[in-house]
Length: 128
Picture 1 (tube, rainbow, N blue to C red):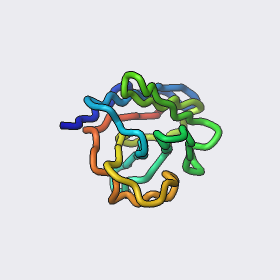
Picture 2 (picture 1 turned 30 degrees about the vertical axis):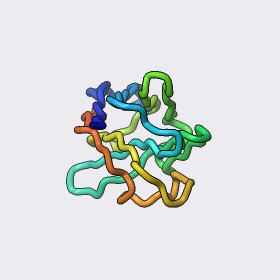
Picture 3 (picture 1 turned 90 degrees about the vertical axis):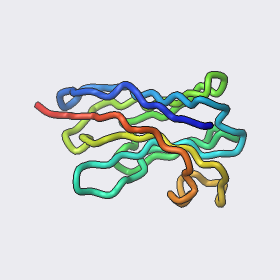
């Protein structure tokens, strides 16, 4: 059974950096979307970054562009999110997610309902 486990969250000051990791228990598939989502208290869960396992094509939310970098280690079924220049607004629970099938072949627009597997989340807190 597929399991996703995030790690790397913590508390940092504004301008700091964190690297989140997501370890999958099984092969993540040749044509799936891997993604990082985040959810702040009282807000909807939002996609932060995605990577398509077939082409390694990546996408970012507007808030993540230029500051966050998504990557993966396909051999070890791991995914990462390097976050730099962190802002207070980045404070949230961060989740990794994996689709089981995809509809669009464009992870930037893949419906959230296609993400079948979710991790338990790792908390990122940015405060001065």
